[in-house]
Length: 209
Image: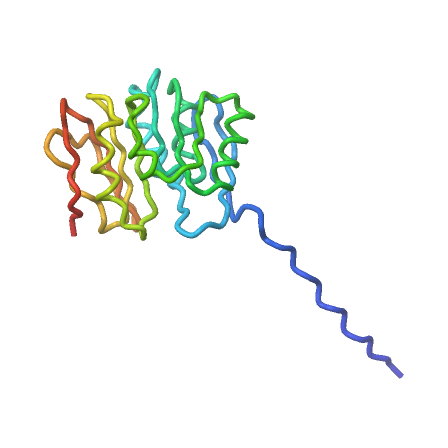
């Protein structure tokens, strides 16, 4: 006579408080360094494919540049720029956990990075401590921040600054006069563009449909 064994108790699934994924630095001295991507609403790191394209565009302009990564998230854009020769980077991230994770990586790499745990709009409202040669602007798509960010940004830019914008496929803002489009591209999810500032350029705030 066979005897049926009692069912085993269900095993408890481990709590998922760690990273939901990873991205990596794809070039330069810290190539293949992994960066954690925790689960956060609106956190959407720039893909490897788009970053590879962007940094190919930027290659001759990175050495010695001062970089601003305004919505740093995982820190992938700012740290990639440093890996490829930028002189310094300021990374702005309002989420304390994300800012702490970026700081830990920057410290481990001995990167010339300043990581600030502050809201980007609050930081932009401060008098500029320096002017940046290259700025990455990749805000959470659902937050509707373009108008406020682009109005406050020019005070923090060098006269010949480069500006990278990444937006939803139908959300790319239009820039005002004095900006020259250098390159642009798109995927199914995003549009991205690199601009060069010319003299006293102003930034537009209208989104194209």
